[in-house]
Length: 84
Length: 246
Image (cartoon, rainbow over all chains, first blue to last red; front, side):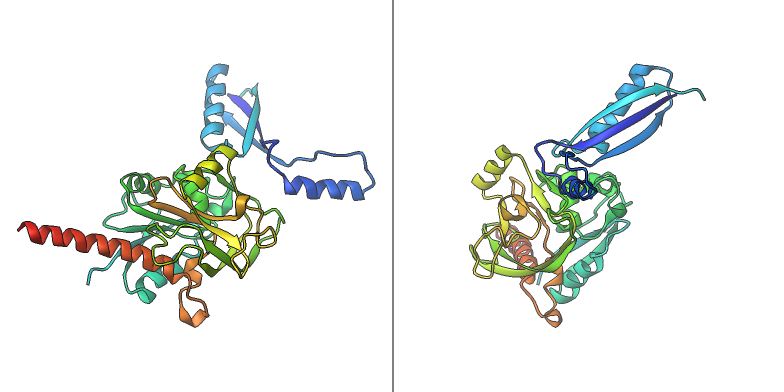
């Protein structure tokens, strides 16, 4: 069994108004040096296989077909073997 | 008199399905039928409406889950065979997720849900959705969305412009396409586009909410009337052809 941790982020070319709003919030806390706040998504899932390549392939395909929209988002992920 | 057959797809979370059904059936006097998203086939329809709402609670991304509903396979087939498909608001989002229309609808630039009447300029009146409008005409139709900020890469945008695929733009009362008239940050003030073959329209504004005279605005009827005109004229033409042959 593999545990996938997938991070989906808006492409850097796309304005992220949520990130901007949060950045203002951080500034109003007094942390003036904080910038480039971007909001993304964290998705976790388990893939039932003992083969790392298989877990990687399935995770990548799920990202490409559903979890991220390539028009506006990029994705990355890490895999960790878990014992069941 | 031939009637156009409208099929309104109902997803879990659709909430403008009844409005669309009422306008097609009662206001426009055509045939209207709901199609549950779990059905495998659209059946005998002339127009498919993907209505507004919050299919699957907008989980993951607007329209991202709905595009995998069983009925969508047949919607894609119907569209690829040239059938008339109109996606309104959430329906537009589903069409982009399904790859039937280019681009994506991002979160509104203001981060606010915007629910009000807007002005739209008809950029192309030579479509099966706008043939009862005139080019440059200004219509008043409401929007109600949090994710209507149309975005597409520059190359595709150029292609959309060149092919006349941009059908509606947000404008002011006088028809000027300005930054102030843009309610959500959409690229080039885009409110609605068609695919290259011209049979699939996606738009953020709600024509079904501006069709019943009781509600005070009837500009939305023009979009319904255009679709009906296309279908009825087509059927009459083919009927004539058959009559001549026999």
